[in-house]
Length: 111
Image (cartoon, rainbow, N blue to C red; front, side, top):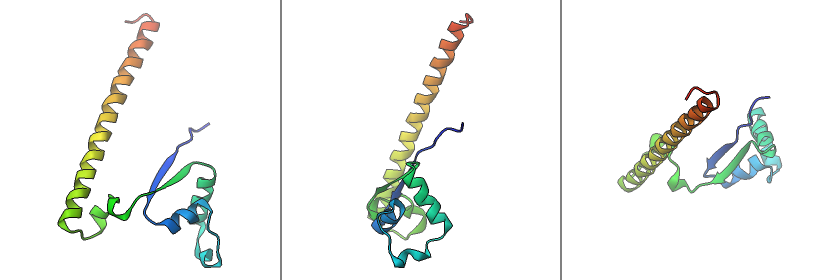
C-alpha cells in the first residue's frame, strides 16, 4: 500500500479556497474542469488542505510579479528563512537516520 501524502496549499484567494473545499457551489462555477474537480476530491479525502495566506506573503510573487523594494526585501528574507528551516530539517533527518542505523547495527551485533 502506498504511503498517504498530505499536501498543504498556501492560497491567497478566498474564492479559490471555498471552491476547493466545496463550500461554494454556483452556476458561475460550471467552468471548472476535471483538474479542479480532482483537487476538490483530494481535499474532501483529506489529502490536500488549504491555508489562506495574504497576498503580501506569497513567496511565488518573487518570480511572477514586479515588486517594490520593500516587498522584494521582505519576500527575500522570508525565502532565506524557509531555506534555513529546510536545511535544519535536513540535518535533523540526517542525524535521526544515523541514530537509527547505529541502533539497527547494535541489534544485529555489528556495533
